[in-house]
Picture (cartoon, rainbow, N blue to C red):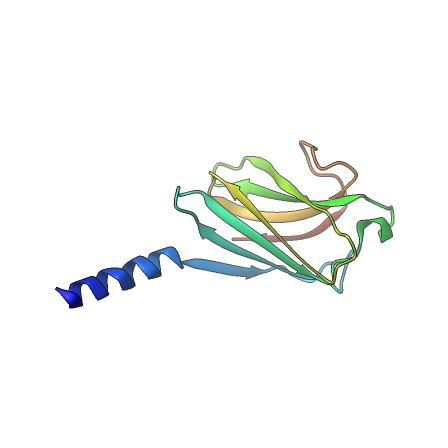
Length: 130
């Protein structure tokens, strides 16, 4: 009985801890940035995306200047979705987490002046197919 409990607990732990980390390619716009996305599933079967960026330049320093970064996804049905914004306040490391009910085919980040846009602007920072 104890052995079955241990095995069951181990299986639950493995299931809850399943995640994958994807490293984005070096950006032509902000080449010093090291950006990663950790993809996992929460208790409600939603996709959880944690973006971590180290040395991501303040978007006001870009040319042309922008106000923030926006994280986008392309879903399994090829829908384009704005996950949310990353506001860079000159910290050397930023982490933001988003939840979505969609399965993700691709994640990309753009620099924008407004976080509530429905389509990405021209300033592509980086992208990663999953």
